[in-house]
Amino acid sequence: MELALSTFVRSIFVDNMIFAYYLGMCSFLAVSKNVKTAMGLGVAVTFILVCTLPINYMLENYVLKEGALTWLGPEYADVNLSFLAFILFIAIIAAFTQLVEMVVEKFSPSLYASLGIFLPLIAVNCAILGGSLFMQQKAFPNVGVATIYGLGSGIGWMLAIVGMAAIREKLAYSDIPKPLKGLGISFIITGLMGMAFMCFSGMKI
Image (cartoon, rainbow, N blue to C red; front, side, top):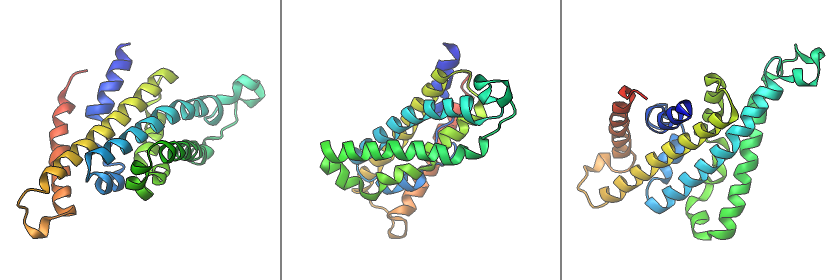
């Protein structure tokens, strides 16, 4: 329980995908102009992380890594399929992205139109693939902790993009120097938010 709680809190604040690793920046900067749209994309990213991380965890531990196939028999103990990890991880992510795209198009056409190309591009969002790759590095003890890590990573990414969208909505009424309007001020704010999130790195969890 303690490990699960620590993993959840760290993935949101300390190991935030945006502010700690700057993963998923293209969608983060492009979609963070409106809070409602940013929230929709954040929920979609969180859903895909929660669904794909446990599947990729089981693939990694029961199919791909060296010795993972011993459950089929001792003759498979030396089989190492880890070279297929990237292909299979991306295939799983792409499948769930297609599912999310169809659901959003069916039930929220306005959100689907506002997200545009960035909804199908979730399939190649480096924050989502990064979640699966970090899962490999961290070697979680079970699929439950991996799922909690996916949930926390998604919430952290959603928190970042919604916060950025709220700030950018306020900036529309601010007197910003012309050379800094648009992406210029967005990069500055992202850096400042990243520095603010560094405060959480001193937390003892």
